[in-house]
Length: 80
Image (cartoon, rainbow, N blue to C red; front, top):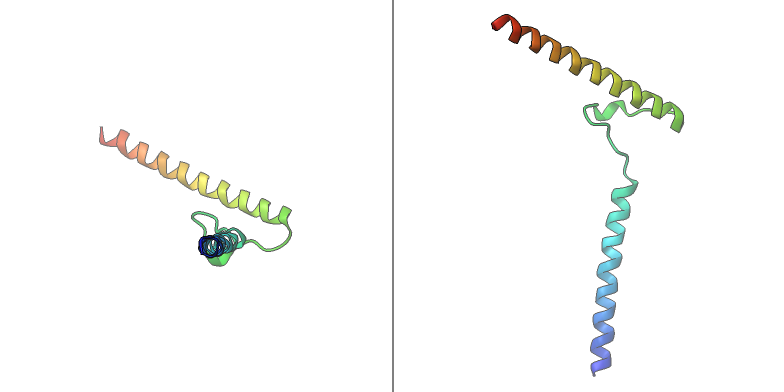
C-alpha cells in the first residue's frame, strides 16, 4: 500500500514538473518585443539584419530621449 501511494505521488509530481517545463519552454520560444517599439514592426530577415535594425531603433530612441532632455534643460534655464 505504501509503495502504491509513493508511486502515485511520484507520478503526480512528475506530471506537475512536466507541465511547468512545457509552459516555460513556450515562454522561451515566443518572440521578444523591443521595448518602446510597436509589435507590428518586428524586424524581418536574418539575425544580422535583425540585430542591425534593433540597434538602429535603440539609437533613434536614445537620440530622441537626449533631445527631450536638452529641451527640458533649456526650459529650466529659461525659467530661472
